[in-house]
Image: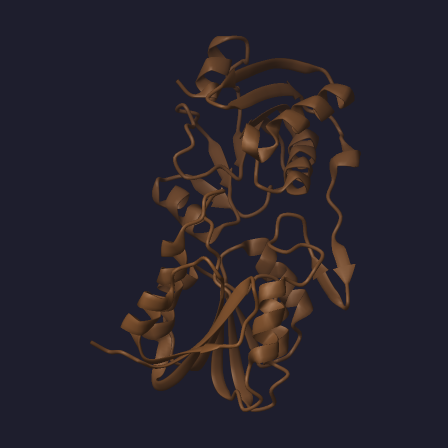
Length: 316
């Protein structure tokens, strides 16, 4: 039985009004709650919930809820901010998460700030609930550095990712034509791509809504177009694709995600197009690259990251 089900059996009252679930993973047990809004900024998950018939949004709209359920994310700061948003707009707030996601520290902190009314521990995780109240100290703050802005929860918050910096430095000066940055994050690589005057268009494709929102603030070049979408199923026709693909769908590494990005690049590139890719040393992408491209060159990297230039996508 899910922790939320146990909570309803042991003291948490069923809501008499609208419910909001903030950042639930697909498959989270909503225990038959009606009138439920799913707040999910990750494009594939948002679409999966929508396909199940739920109303979906990317941010919590300004209205009142009888119950808000906050699911811990991998970012402690982002989760705290979500808790503060929920507490300001809901009569009761439930917080649920695994130990690996820092649920223990959130529970300890909330007990100092308000009256926690109940808690459930099960399956290497915890759920607790409290009455809604203003918690301004938990609100997140954007981080600005070197002319860039990042928000809590985005990848490489407050700093340039070292792999992206390595790839950006390796991009050829002659990069030109129509280019795509797949899995663009908050826009660092995109900004470096657009330093090439011969680039005529850049499609910035990112699945995380808040990362894309940062990219819109960080990349002001009129050649850029922004797309909230799943890069692994993206379609287009490009002279070049540049990417630092993610390799986590949860806390566990998932090389298949990177392979799906490579397949997307193959699909989107013109016959003489080029892929520029950076990856962690341990990720086994060489076979996928050789299956998808007629020519694969490994460029000079470093002890942590490897760089590839792949060209002439295979059409069979």
